[in-house]
Image 1 (cartoon, rainbow, N blue to C red):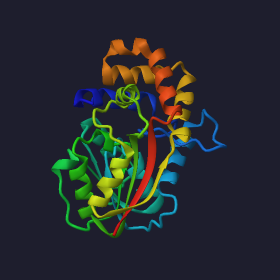
Image 2 (image 1 turned 135 degrees about the horizontal axis):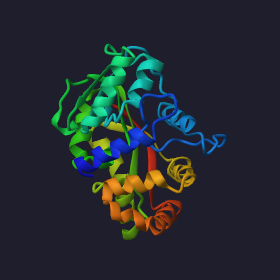
Image 3 (image 1 turned 45 degrees about the horizontal axis):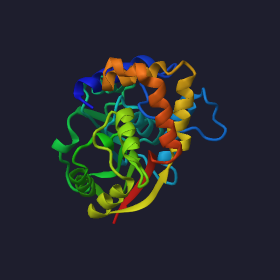
Image 4 (image 1 turned 90 degrees about the vertical axis):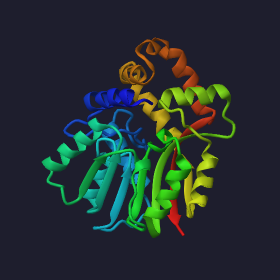
Length: 274
């Protein structure tokens, strides 16, 4: 995804995905539990964060790095709900502008710091963070191996890397791979098995890697159907050009077919520094 396309996409999120009564946008798929109504996008976004940190003993004052922090929803969740100190990084200026406005409005300057930068250009002291998060952002990173090694350095011993990631499966066909790249706006999708290799090379022990596509992407598709996929058409227009959205029905059919056949999907992953 180009930076221009990402800026356009962020405007769509700000305008259309903002939750009622909220001053931030949740830039991720949402997680629908068995009892979550399909229209309950706010509950799905809340579920998503709860699932990401499930089983983790998070304490007030712990330091977190949020890679690809978007408009700050995850950072706010960790700062306000758990009292954590969060450093957010995102390459899109509009995202950081939104985060900084919310930080000022909620007087969270002592809890959240957000900078506009390419995470590969940054460095932090060894053992700086208790947790590092990357929610649906790693597939936009071209040099994952280098970043994983940095993450291994930045985490404290016993610290945890929590990430959700779009990835291909071993059974993925060429067409499904192309569709996945098209729908995610990414040229850097990889096999999920590669992530386990990156983790181990970085001195991180994979604890949990699970496919949550049925509860996330497939349900998000059903939620999007409620208004004729208007938001999705705008997303595809921003990431692939306006004309491509007219072919949406066939692309959606092929995409849902590839997701249901488990050719690719969204995964919740957790790894601990040895």
